[in-house]
Length: 283
Figure 1 (cartoon, rainbow, N blue to C red):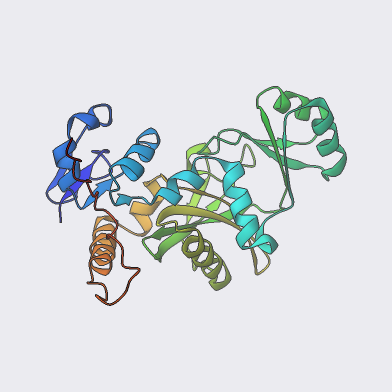
Figure 2: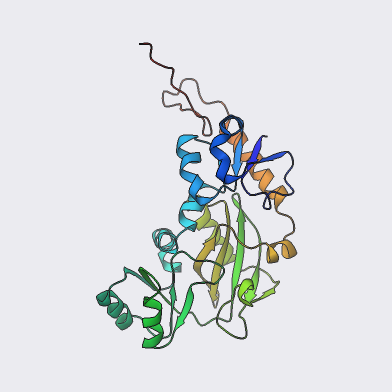
């Protein structure tokens, strides 16, 4: 299996992987053409690698597209499992919409900057002053029901499987559960209902590399978000090196794709990951 990586650190333990600097990728046409998989490209590379080169990409294009923006992510969750999404209001930022959200949301509530991660850009709104300060920082207003929890779950999906997870206990000096923001990692069993929800979301949306954040209210799971490039601090401790899991998935996915199609099927198509060059038309 020929692998090209655009993230040397993420693929440090991958065997026989050729690293290309993202800024130089268009200078390596032949290598990209011959690769079986392109691993961990930058977000801005995705469209060219997917639509122009038509290559297999890991994480999946859906993992990139939905993981890049909390607005698109939340709307996708609402489409697949609306009963598991906290009450959320999303609008373009205007004085009228800001006032509308303020009137509708029970307080306290959570406000988020759509393109943020690691707990950054997440605010607890307790007063009108808090709300006004948040509104000055974003073009899109994202307000979500505050859930009365002191911990949440990080459940990790690789390929088409949940490979593990852990609890994240809230930091003493705030309401963030993120390890990067002072949250504490806690081992423990993963509730079956949470695992089932994550698998449903991941499989329906085509997400194959993500850390899903799940809040449990009693035995009922609510999905908060997922992170395509989740931190490895807790993962390495609880699950171990994920390299073999990723390689197993890549091999299986490629083998499934390359199964010969029915020669009598008139709808047979070019296998994914193959760019077909049309012959030049003679003058």
